[in-house]
Amino acid sequence: MVPSGVALTVAVAVALALPSVALENGLARTPPMGWLAWERFRCNVDCRADPHNCISERLFFEMADRLAEDGWRVLGYQYINIDDCWSAKQRDAAGRLVPDPERFPSGIRALADYVHARGLKLGIYGDLGSLTCGGYPGTTLDDVKQDAQTFAEWGVDMLKLDGCYSSEHEQAKGYPEMARALNATGRPIVYSCSWPAYQGGLPPKVNYTILAEVCNLWRNYDDIQDSWDSVLSILDWFFTNQDVLQPAAGPGHWNDPDMLIIGNFGLSYEQSRSQMALWTVMAAPLLMSTDLRTISPSAKEILQNRLMIQINQDPLGIQGRRIVKEKTLIEVFLRPLSQAASTLVFFSRRTDMPFLYTTSLAKLHFPEDAVYEVQDVYSGKIISGLKTGDNFSVVINPSGVVMWYLRPTALPVQPWHVVREQAHGEGLRPILL
Image (cartoon, rainbow, N blue to C red; front, side):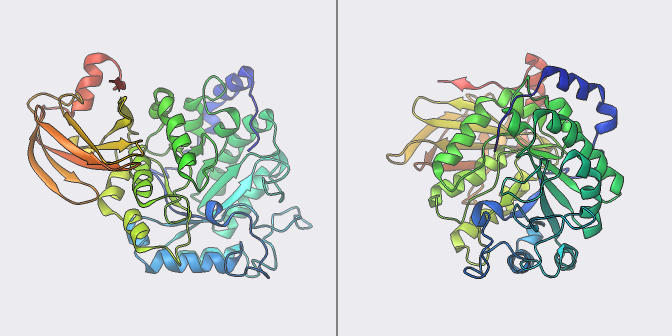
């Protein structure tokens, strides 16, 4: 990633052009779910030394089989996404992108046909610049229309457009141009862009109103690495800046904190459960990057949690917020859901021992005189008749979470989060204790 600034005059110019840049594709009404190659397999192109794990059609054929046959597709994991390093080092004589002939001898169209035949969708990677981050041919401003048409002809269903080796001016012009070009192909292609990540992710350099009119999802911040420290750094940035980021998300346009690394090498069992729960609270795309051929039963169980996926895919599309940050290193997150339901995540940053945390829904500003049925998202345990004023306790393991799904059995006429926003003129704010 090569961050750079963008002039306010450029942002104003793009804003004036909004009616002509809107994506208008009707896609990604809930956060996209699927599999992405990058974090686990990176730019491994040595198929002679490592044929099992190199970026090749074999890898994607095998991952498509696993998505289709191992219970992933039926849960909503439908995209299988190629990342960087798939192409030949040069465009062809007509200036078109072409896949590496040794690693993708069948071509991308054949791979797309294979994926589609299994009820899945294919994503591909491009870069708005002279080169991709891995040094392969990029998409310059002159290439945008041709590359969009090429992807459509290949049967691609999602495009991730990175931003290495491009200037702030090229990004401000090129990302909206690609939205128009994808629309013009007539093929429904979900558009994931890295534009805000290259501009620091925050206003005034990033205008999220404009961004939501250009992209279906976007990378705001640093690439995730296979470590708990990396997960925490992403969480810290997203929730420190939640007042800016949370309103930007919704059906058709999502903040993307990057891939799920559950099933790899850097997270413990508790940390894996935490990433899944917190990504769900953020209404984040659920794009796994792990080896589905060898994934452990425990990691698979986390990623295939049906209630978790239901919450992530809630049609309201409201991104959650951190509402409590305790000195005891306990944090509480809330996401309002459809049908006046909600989810709470109790998260421990402690590293010593399980922590007994006691609170009440009243302290979390739920409405008075409401009654809830609560289901623990991981254990399945149900608590019936929990009143707003009742104290309760949860035991949270170090680096772990307790996640609740709350369904009201008696409550005010309107969902409580709507009532509060009308009464106070703002969304929920963090409670610092």
